Image 1 (cartoon, rainbow, N blue to C red):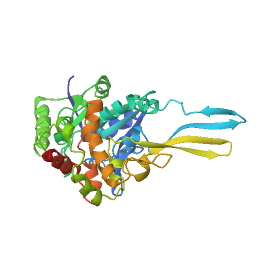
Image 2: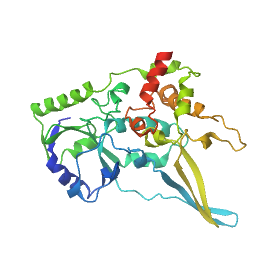
Image 3: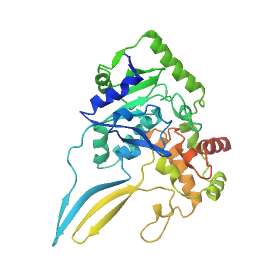
Image 4: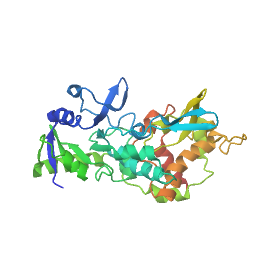
Length: 339
């Protein structure tokens, strides 16, 4: 597909034109928290994007709280209603390569059940993703250690690379081809291509080298003393999992109001004590030792065995958010060295 360029000064006008056909979502900073939100005023759109956003794409596909259905009881009969109204298509701008790569994992998770998660896949189908290459990665980023998706992006439709006063635009899907057909895009030159490749290689050189964690994770020691040390330190606050783009655990609750009510799902985490508490009182993970081990094993051992994909994309959010400085990258390195 032929690459093009778009001036940074034309980004707002381009997305404003798209807003007539779809909702446009982009990173927005609210105080110290940056997250993807629907854009209403394109004149104030900032293209100085945080790397990565504090909150990723997870809530765009599985909201923190989501109603599954509502019901009304009449005697012994129950009438169920669900929100099946067609949602407006949407475009998410400013997606980082790690967040897009995380969708490959969550797609596999949500497809590996019967029935498949219809709410999740409906949102996936209605979404176009425009990625932006990270030219200034955060101190905690280690995506290049996990995969090559920074240089070879996946799960997005259009990939933009900052080359000064413009973006180098690569269409990765037919949706992306349609997007760069807009009047704001111009043909890219060889100099533009070289500038984009140079920008990518510069950031890749500043990040960790690739490691085959999927292979090394197969032989993690179940009784490694590292987990006892982590348990002593961990506060079990759940910040690491709630900010993780691949975490997907949820709880289902019911809100009853007389003869009416609703059933909804909300985010949950394996780091909470009651996550695995059973109805008869047994808890297979009664201490933080088991729970901290579960998080690491799930991402670096169980997920490759089950889906053939690591359950981590190296975004580093869990590292920056942890109030007691637990670093999953260092934890995994230590476990691999202990084998």
